[in-house]
Length: 401
Image 1 (tube, one colour):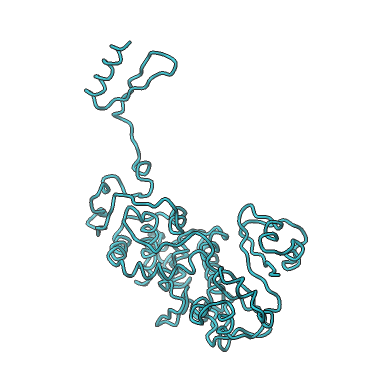
Image 2: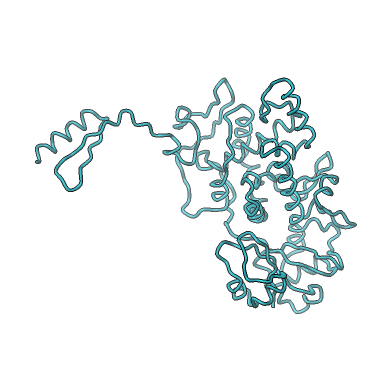
């Protein structure tokens, strides 16, 4: 028996292209040829969809003389604990073409680590909140990154064209999707209201463009009419109507590649050695409801925050006051909620104390009641529930006792 094993091993080392399999329960061995086995590169490098002939440590060059990505790191330094960027990256699914426009912005982002650090640091307060909203609607994870392109995650951003806020709404478009403009309040800068409006707008465009997300995203930037007209022109000329073939304003022609570029970098961040501000995959902010006119500075004081900290989360309240006889949905850091509610005079301006909870898979009303020191009956009354069935993604008011 031993001499057969020696012969087989010698054969293996000489050929260099064979595999020896032992048949369990016998003294036989099978020698299998490996020469024609084709192992896809995405099986080997699951975090990078770069073609095999352009990977392995060399510059990533688009064919046809297009621009190259110069900052490639083939050593994956992925930490053991996943952060929110990892979770988002795993959900990114839009195809990213290897073309000049996309590669230009990959190069640009990779060469400006200060910009990446600044923007991803700003995202820390809002990323989980937006991610949960997008996930609940079962929309593409790429949309979580739109504020990176629109406003650099700056809720005070204002463009020369009159767009404002994290999602860069103009007043007419904002009004069309439910944003309010009052004396001392601008819904475009309200994180809660503008995020809901932006996702409503994108869902509307997706439906209008018959399920084409690149058309919808382009229309978010330049308007539904321009994209529709560009599609009509190409159809009339017998040309393709995909985004890359459309004659659109230069800003829009660059807008979609920007989003796809940052999405691909986030998805393959370890391959590109892209440093992003660490963000825990857990809630950072909690929604509370204020039913009276109250100064944000007072609210901040009662929550143990500085005025600037609270205003940065609620920049829609321009004059620093909430409104009387209106449900003012305010964001506070999750770890300050109890401090605020326990303050002796907080009941003066919070007629009914609620927090807004986004239901996670497997949660029950009894569990929520126990964790929040309340009762199932009070939760049902606060949400006008006739039964006890709740579902993942649902938003419930949780009364605070």
